[in-house]
Amino acid sequence: MAAARKKRIVILATGGTIAGVGEPGCDTGYVSGQMAAEDLVKMVPELSEYATIASEQICNVNSDDMTDALWLKLSKRIAELQEDDDVDGIVVTHGTDTMDETAFFVSLTVRCEKAVVFTGSMKPATAKNPDGPANLLGAVRTAAGFAVDDEPPANRVWVYFAGELFDARRVQKCSASALDAMGVDGPGVGADWNAPAEKRFFDVSGLDSLPRVNVVYFTVDANPKILEYAACVSDGLVIAGAGSGEFSLPWASALEKIDIPVVIASRTHHGGVTLNESLAPGRISAGSLPPQKAAVLLRLALTSTSRIPEIRRLFSE
Ligand code: ASP
Image (cartoon, rainbow, N blue to C red):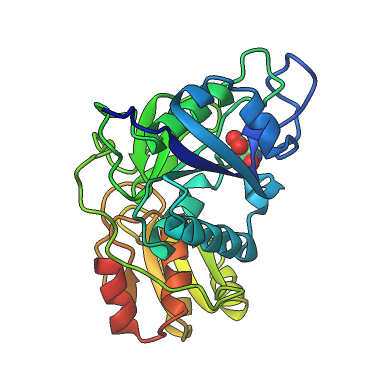
């Protein structure tokens, strides 16, 4: 019997701490997004034991400098690679700060026949014991089908981090400093290998920008004028409300005058939002999506509709 051929994995590098460079041996005081894709690959010679690797540089930024243009470039390239018979899986290296947003964006805009696995690191490439190489190896192994009992990975967008695998819908950055900073948005929710893949799909192939959505964070005595200002510079808003998406009566009055789509999320980042109709009549519940992911979905929803019932339906799926 012929030996199985090695899987072909393409690494798309976008920057982040995994490509960060600083004082040799130091964990802090570095600059994100410096090292080139091919150098990240060279740091992990074991990759070639599991797959034939190609690498491409999509951008080289701190992930806080991701933009709609970069998201669209990445998503379109992943869509092309999904169609390429010479490619078996895709790994994306990315800063951890906004990895959850980008992975969710890709999961909503690419029809995945092949696994897409995001990874990154908390220490720069020049640290004494960088965590990036092990994360990259784990991501490539996952994309090549070595991660779970040698089964090919379910075809969707994943985040591999510090030995754990999360799906793009649930993952968030949960710690500013821990090496296992990526986690899930609900207690006890890990990667479910067999859970159904994302059903929503937005065709972004003809787009070069996305609608503007801003998140407004409620705190005690927060000035309602920030809501009014945010509405002036946005096509849609997400409110990060307290508890199950609540805010003060002055905010409720300010909200009455806002006539763009508004999604109500929770600043707790966990659990579901029950829309309080007396505070936010006719608005949209983010459900269990945290504010930053509600913003991703609202931006995409607004590319195809501004009808509230339709947006509500997209959020309830
Ligand atoms: N600021 C960095 C980034 O998101 C943090 C990281 O990669 O861990 O690009």
